[in-house]
Amino acid sequence: MGIKEEVYYEGGPHVGDLIINILLGFTVICIPLTVGAVVRALWLRYRITDRRISVTGGWMGRERSDIIYAEVAKVVTVPRGFGAWGDMVVTLKDGSRLELRAVPKFRELYDYISDKISPKARAVSGGIGG
Image (cartoon, rainbow, N blue to C red; front, side):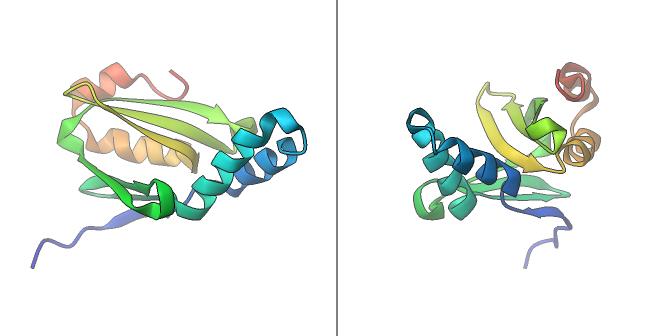
């Protein structure tokens, strides 16, 4: 049996992302954005623990990505929805990236993740929106 992980956040994307994209869906040109928001709302789930960041997504939630904090090289956030939610990009030491879209409480999550990553990665990350 493994070591018990303490879950800091577990949930899906912010509901505001879905609402705004459904409203935009009434314009024909934004239908792809609406479909993307519906798929995210149905199958995208985030789990942030004291040991790792896990993202489950893809069609019917069949894809899962797990990263440990020791592999993080940089974290960048961008506020969305008038600051109610935000997007987060986690860059790993090997150069690959993990995108977290429409993250609720993204400021608190950024602070939590920043406390877990190396001082070098924290210095490169540079804070919210940067």
